[in-house]
Image 1 (cartoon, rainbow, N blue to C red):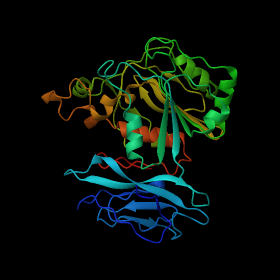
Image 2: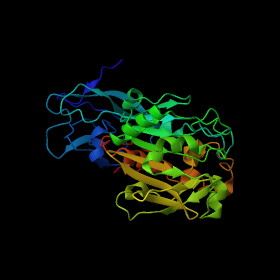
Image 3: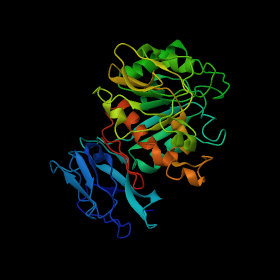
Length: 375
């Protein structure tokens, strides 16, 4: 087993993925990247990295202090991206594993807790898993994010919540279709509220069932002024061919002018939306998207934290990310019109996670097959 490489070491380790160069990846968040996709490590100034398309590897930007910083070393270990580059070569990368202290240790992983049962409907009912988000973060975040999935009810204590930066609320139930729906004690609700006010980020989903599925989510986030309604919002279709081939209606009405939530629609044109619930927004809330005249995506700032509510769960299904399991995936008339062709699901999830936890400056995504905009 190869020992971990310390970026602070005064040497360059060269990693190859054949003769091909990969697209440029740059930005302040990329200081967490720790990924070598061509060339080698030449240091990371505390601020930005760039993976050069000309094979030059990772080079620093800004001040030449390097990633490690005074009194700290940033530890990475070798690994391999699961997505092959064009031509079949596997891209080799370096991923973060930890940091030993000091002012260079600004790139701790973003810890995400996914609470609740997976949905059952999707484009292929009972055959459309919701593992795409977890797989995507694990394979493409270069160690800057990790996800723990709790499908059974956990007690929300301050100690439990302290381990996470972001909590995603899925179907809070014993069964996502029929319930029973979980209920939370006053102590749990108070702990959840305190965690958010002290900087935690929440992403809430709904649309799993026609039952009272919104009740537990409303228990947890209702203090923010955001609540789900009990109505059913089937959604509208912006393009009949896309809707037929993706087996979902389309969310296409984005609010791009409000600076508080503008980044939520970065790089987004369409995502699938199918029979969710409308959202009531507080007076100080920010509506980021609407569907059929109702609120579909609402965010609000709560103390040091953020609450983001989405009106559906269709973005969790694997078919909407990759087309796998889509009944129309082999239909010749649907080629170029499938979810992976028309929807920007990965970008949307990046935007929501990044917005809900703005302190996660190191969270980034490396996806050579379907690059997204990092902001």
